[in-house]
Each structure stands twice: as structure tokens, then as C-alpha cells.
Image (cartoon, rainbow, N blue to C red; front, side, top):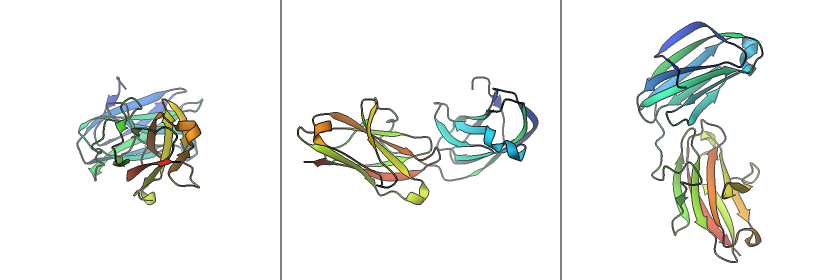
Length: 220
């Protein structure tokens, strides 16, 4: 990333990815800029290509193979990474396209991207959040003695991207939601009573943008 080639809205041709090679391109985006990246290569090579977009903090905001798109929520320098896992050189062209879009604004609980920076769940045991592309939200709560816990998500639109909920003890996962049960995790008192736990909300992929309500309930 430190040696990324600076670009603007443009097209670059006759490029090559050697075995084990990674190409980086950097460009400055304003808030609301929608970046589209189109990689053109031999059609049968698509499975070996991997493209991604990162912000200045190193967060992966979008991923794809020959295509990716993202709307910037803040002004900054963004880096496009293009790689091939093939053992032979791969020729490609790449185009960078700019238009205007609607950005995803982080909620007021940021930064809570790690267990260490987790937001404390308020006394009402309910919290409204917003998950933006490349984001992971962490919320901390303490379970009373002799009680289990049910943690759930509601108020999100599944057609905007599915959300995944996990409950952690430190950095260890104690339970995650399943597609068959919705965004809900239940843990018995024998496992969690008196413990300080962290709920983590992520998207099914790096492009997920969705609001949600986190609810914590005590179980007998």
C-alpha cells in the first residue's frame, strides 16, 4: 500500500500480474463519491483474481473479482488491491470510474470495531446501530449471577444484506447466529452467569449496509 500507484478516473491497459504479485492503486475520494473498479482479463481467469478496496485505516470496504463498487463516507485516500493466485502471469486492464452515490454514515457508537473498544450496552439493554461496509460493531454487557442471556438483532432489512451476530468472552466465540434461526444467540446460566460478554455484529460480506437494534434479555 505504501507504494501504491496514484490514479484518478481513468483506464489502464496492458498490465501484468506475475505469480504471487499484488498491484496497488491509490486515489482520493470525496464524501459521496462512488468508485467503480472494472478489471478486464481473460474470462476464464476470473476465479483466480481478487480485488479489494481499503481505507486509510486498513479497513476492507469492498471486495470482488473483476468488479467492485463503494460509496465513500468520508474524504480520504483509498487503495485498490488487485491480486492473482495463479502460478502463471496474468494480463489485465483496469478501469476506475467515479459517480455520485449515497454514503453510509457510522452510528454514534464508533469507534467500536474491536473487543477492546466495545460500546457498553445501556441499562435498557437495547441499542440502535448502523453497520457500514467493512465494519464490525462490538457491544459489551455483564450477565447477572444465576442468569442466562438471549442476544438478538431486529429492525434490519434482509434485502440490504444479512447480519451475523456472535457472543464473545474476551476474544473467544461462545455462540453465533445461524441462518436457520435468525440473528439470535441464547446461552444458559451455567455457561455465562456473572460473565462480562461482548456481542459482535458483522455483515455477510464486506459490502453489507444495514441498520439494526441489538436487544439483550436475561434468561432464568
